[in-house]
Image (cartoon, rainbow, N blue to C red; front, top):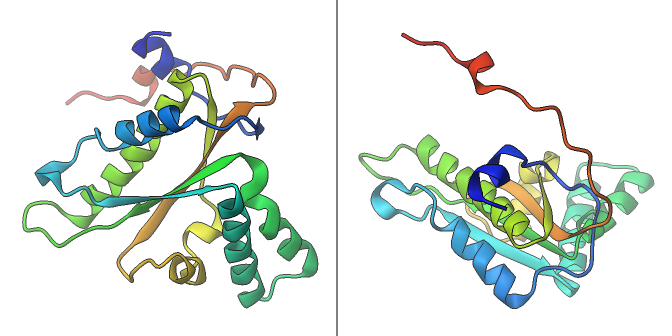
Amino acid sequence: MDAIELLLTRQSCPRLAEPGPSEAQLNTILDAGVRVPDHAGLAPWEFIIAQGEGLKKLGQVFADAAMSSGADEAALAKALVMPQRAPLVIVVVAKPVEHEKVPELEQHIAAGCATMAMQQAAFASGLGAIWRTGSYAFDRNVHQSLGLTQGDQIVGFLYVGTPVVKAPIKAAKKGGEFTRYL
């Protein structure tokens, strides 16, 4: 698949299973994440990998956060297994730093670009991926459990694995429909 085809056919793969990425594939995915536009070379991101026992640990982090917010038993049970919907989850964290020329928003966008690049690298490696957020991305209990600081923000949970089913291709959108010229 060439780069243009990859970009024009990108879509999420919501059902993922083993095998997850090999060590070489994971390194490629992570390397793609750090090649995105990054004004002033700040690298305002961190990638937290959960696989194997790490998926259970992340599930416990979600369940603890759900319990703290008063969730019912069904929500607690769901939170506990959420990360196990794929063999690997990359928690992508924006870690903005104070800089006179690079606003915080731009640094958050760079972390988002890293997430997209990693998803594309997973697809190019023959894997599937889905970028999820949800309430746990913004939950301070989750942040604290993952050792994040006050200024850090989870921009997504990138689930990576082998697609279980071939997702139907979504209808193509034309960029011109969202464009205007000055």
